[in-house]
Structure formats: structure tokens, C-alpha cells
Length: 226
Image (cartoon, rainbow, N blue to C red; front, side, top):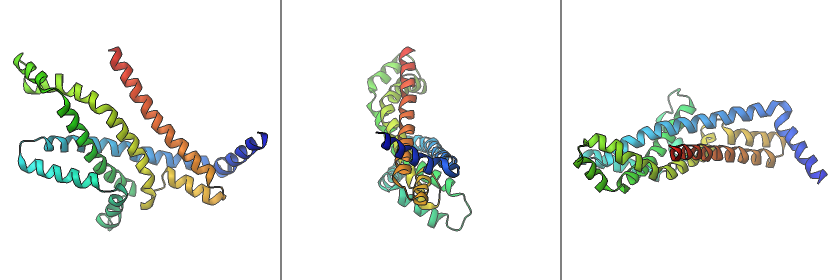
């Protein structure tokens, strides 16, 4: 037992303490959080727009949104990243982090659009009709009746989408971004002890995932209290 603890302590010091490597890990973690947060933010906005178009009665907008959602949902995010970085923005001087945010916003936006559409269509239409009969305008009925219920329906899937985005960011190293995954991999290559830094990286990703779960749980408890 003592020898096992000694190995752990030695690996910890060699991989994270020596040369202030933990500061490099924190920097990579910051990059991962930044890409995840901005990708989710803009992806949610794009998802809302695509959802509106998808449910529109205007045939042109509906077809365009259907095509975009189908293509973006069916395209691996790594290939989308590489197309944007090595083809679309190959001649530009745009920061790779911005390109990664664009890629994740496009990919997550398509998924979120379908989450929103499914949630909205799952709400009982008779409640909306009843609200209209009571004098609610179409807009007021939507925000008072449909949207709150759709939000509850979409919440678990949206939560999973956030976790997926955080995990998917592990591929941004392919376009020269030093994120959390690339950082711990570089440390393992430098020290010749790949297991410890990679395992530590997994723990950090798990920590981010459970932080998301905790935030959603807090929101759920507050909603129930209200």
C-alpha cells in the first residue's frame, strides 16, 4: 500500500509539479472550457434559429433548415473542424480557437435545433388552444404555456448535449489548439509516463461533466421550490 502511494506521489510530482506543469494543464483546461462555453452559446442561438425555420410554414426556409440540420448532424465534428481550418479559413489569420468555436456552434446548433423542435412538438396543443380561447394572444400563449413545458422536456437532452460538447473538444488538437487533451498528452510524452497525465485528464473531464450535472440539479431544485 505504501509503495503504491509512493508511486502516485512520485508521478504527481513528476507530471504536475515539476516545471510548474500544473499551470500548463490549467491553461489547457481554460481553452477547453472557453471553446465549450462559446460553442454552446452560439450553438444554442443557431439552434433556435434553425428550429424556427424548421417549423416555419415557408417551404424555402423549412427545406434549407432541414438540409443544414441533416448535413451538420451527420458530419463528424473532427472533419468539420479540419475542413474549416485547412480549407475554408486556410488563407486567413483567424485564431484556431475561433475556428473551433464556429465548428462546435454549427455542429451543436444542428443537434439543439432538433432537441428544441421535438420538445415543442411534444407539448399538448390543446393547452395552447385553451389559452387562446381564454383570450391569450398567440405570442403570450407560447411564452406562458408552450415554452415552459418544452423547456422541461428538452432539459435532460440539452444537458447531455453540453456534456457531449465538452468531450468532443478533445479533438481540437488536430488543428494545433493546445487544449486539455493535448496538454496532458504532451506532458506524458515529455515525462515518459503517459498513464498518469492522461488519467488526470480524464478526471478533469469527469469533473466538468459532474459540474454540469450539479448546475442542472441546482436549477431543478430551485424550479421545484418556486
